[in-house]
Length: 135
Image (cartoon, rainbow, N blue to C red; front, side):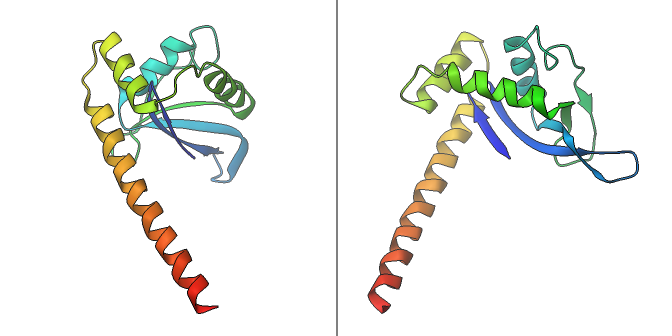
């Protein structure tokens, strides 16, 4: 699952047990930017997320990760949803970056992603119109 927040971008996947099997009760919250995990840890300091070390796995798709029980992550996701008070995500992310004195490179990427998904939506709409014309 990919999650874009004002704190940063994370990819969440089930962790693996030592025998290589998927552990459906444990997740890895992974990031390409260590700062994005630091931001989440700072937002949730009194949770298992806030108290868990950021691991580094050089050479992997997402170098930085925090491993925690899925139930704890679900609780954090719920809080992230409840704290939403803005009507424009990109603007809120820009405000947060300015507040934290962070570079705006993440916000710039959010604009690129918005554009890619806008193009995707337009292609999907066009494809849907063509399939309706055929019927």
